[in-house]
Amino acid sequence: MEWKKLGKIFDPAQFQLSNNCKEFAQSPQTLVFDNFVRIYFSTRAKDNKGEYLSYISFIDMDLTLSKVLNVSKKTVIDLGKLGTFDEHGIFPINPFKNEDKIWAYTCGWNRRISVPVDTGIGLAQSFDNGETFERVGNGPVLGPSLNEPFLVGDGFVKKINNLFYMFYIFGTKWIPKTEFEPQARVYKIGLAKSTDGINWNKNDGKQIITDVLNNDECQALPTVIFIDNKYHMYFCYREATDFRKNKGRGYKIGYAFSYDLENWTRADDESGINLSTNDWDNEMMCYPHIFEMNKKVYLLYNGNEFGKYGFGAAELISVK
Image 1: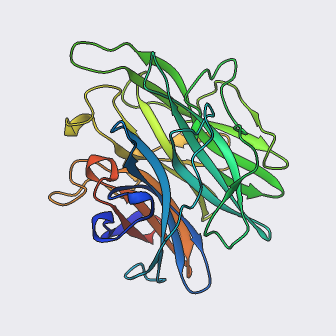
Image 2 (image 1 turned 90 degrees about the horizontal axis):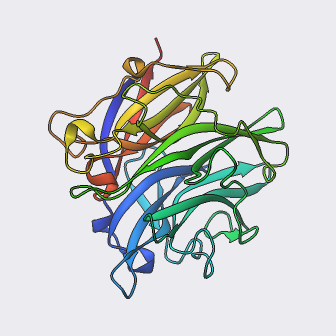
């Protein structure tokens, strides 16, 4: 894969977002319309205790990704009710056109006591062309199970031959906090399938992308596209600890390919995209999203500090 970076295309500090959110535009994901592309992302506000909450916003851009046409004016989806899996935030959201309907798979999170957070994957529907979403129910459609006990999230869905495929992450362990580090989570990429998009069968605890760092490698945000008779997956990966400020241990872009969606070969050196030498993405690249628009393929992604300063794009030039 060979990519041309288009630079940062959105900075949340330059726009008035809903819910009084002033920073972060994490995990950009798209719905393509005839005359524009709607890009959803997760941003942050603080509650009355000064703790972060994650909200979903969107922008509409022209089909060249060079101009912002519109910014969401109202809450795209409310946070969950008291005690539910998405009480404290949604990050990310995966919008999905299912025939004549617009669905969204959400990664909801809630605070815990012994560890900072847990997550689950919910389902919502839009009845106003993707401007707002309503939950199908208050619980997740995919959550913890016998061999995936926590941190189920980051669902990315494709419908192929009337079968839904969901690529997602699941937690394998928590590393206890130390004098220098808070509790650290480890998570891997898995696969689930469904005939209706609501009831899912997963290979419980089966990791589909191999590690390249070590057993504690963290893998996140899988995104998949079919080009030249095979499937291509982009994701991000990092070390489990000391990743926030240490450039060498932070998120990078990973890549794998498959011919059947179930068996994947990891080949990061074929991804065609790397950290910049001196730019907004010179320390970190994370939360990728790949999509097709106007017969071109684009990759959206976040840069330094986990998307605090917005997201950028790259255009696919060739597949070798």
